[in-house]
Image (cartoon, rainbow, N blue to C red; front, side):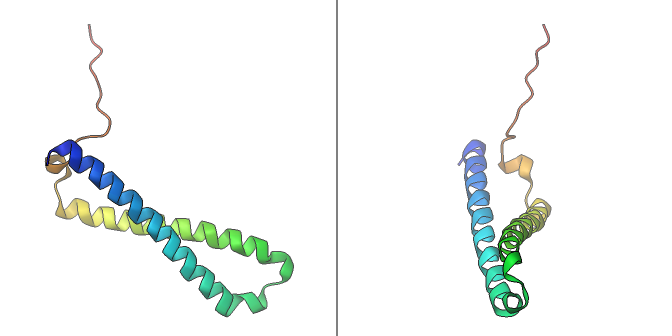
Length: 93
C-alpha cells in the first residue's frame, strides 16, 4: 500500500469513527436524560434539552477524536505512512 491509499483509508476510518462516536454518545446522553433528568425538566424546556444533548454529543465526539489522534501521533510517524492532504506548490517564476 502506498502513502496516498493509507491517507484515504485513514480519513475514511476517522470519519466513520467520528460518526459512530456521535451516534453512541447521543444515545447514551439521551438515555441518561430520560432516566434521570426528564421528570425534573418542564415541558417547555424539553426541546432545548434535546438540542443540548445533540450539541453535547458532538462535543464529546470531538474530544474523543482529539484524544485518539494525540495517542496515534505519539505511536505512529505520520510523515512515514501518510501523504500530506494539501501541498503548497511553488509559484515562483
